[in-house]
Image (tube, rainbow, N blue to C red; front, side, top):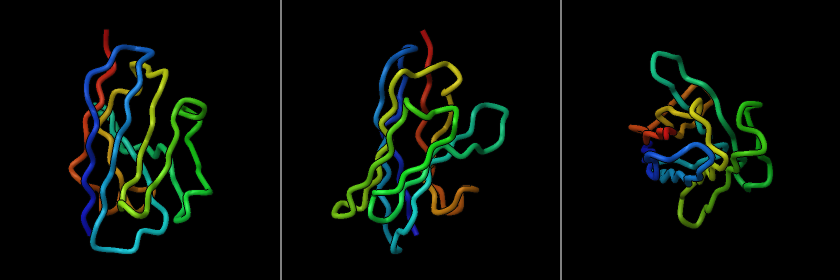
Length: 112
């Protein structure tokens, strides 16, 4: 199982970013995005079902983040808008809500 996250960076408050997660080595059913802010534990962010139809979001990102997937490319995306300083974290994709099989992560920093 391999998950490779990309797309993070430094963005101003109110800005947008799109994260990508490429997976290989398994049949991905549900894919999860989780994040870890400095000094805090893992926080579940969003989930997408295998067909991309069912999506779920943490209350803290609902209405601002959109998860999607392209199974032909073995890739999941997290479109983030209206970013806030509290969104600053290392973002991972994983095969479970608790972060199982997560990759190395991609850093998102929201700061002016």
